[in-house]
Length: 368
Image (cartoon, rainbow, N blue to C red; front, side, top):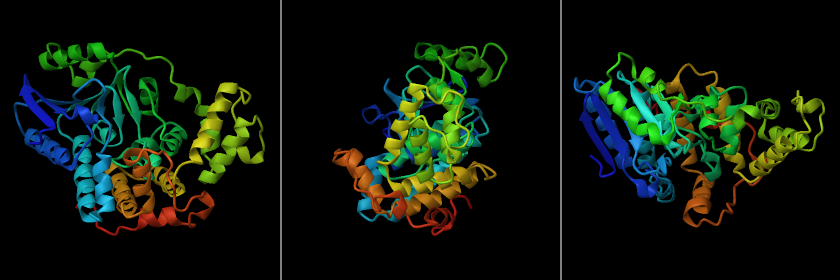
């Protein structure tokens, strides 16, 4: 058992907590192995009727995978170790998704990347007023994984493409609208949810018990942006998405901009679109191209495991590339926020690169 994982069983509830609050419960390889052992041990344990998954501290459930550990893999050419890390993580994510007992995940605070891999596929996914949900991989020259492409692909319209490319952070209302969460429970009521799950005095499933505490958050800004996001992010390439965003931000419409929303002059929406275009032009062109292809292909895949296999092909390619090392250096190591991407422009990304990355199974499958 890892020092950063705590697990206990009481009243039929297996309670497992990510316990690395000083690092926002970021997932190390050791933690992933420990979590896999816990879930496997409880799979056939008659004392465990359901599992609660949460994180220590008040700042977040899990900020994602340990990016510094990933950077060491990339810079030290420990690519085989990185592949083992991803295989173990993806198998754990799939195991949670297919777990024979209900898994209640509490995404209180920051929940990103690998944290979504754990909680996003659980039976019941709770968010609070403190929840900040994102797949932020493009900011470090990477691509959404841990089944993130599967969740993004199932979001309404083109919202998943927007969330993926721009690494946009969702609040509770956004997460519910995008399909990343099932219930909104104010953080002060979480202890009452845990007590109710333990007591289970009234007949009902864990989902029904959680719904007793469910409230309605405020309006989703993501939902309000749906019409122009659909119009812009349905473009076939990232470059054309940016062009449509510029057209909409400027208050113009033309044949290439598709059906823009009924209120194209709304200044808030136009400013939002302009900022989204500006942001895309700062991110890794390679990561953006692969991410767009990944999310769109995930819409056609039969299940989560197929999406994870596709993501594994992508991440094992990225771990050997300049942009991932450079993105982590700029955002996490040196923190100069000035990555130097290679290639630096979308026009310089080789045609067909994204398709080749997602098609080439160089290191075998994740699931035998």
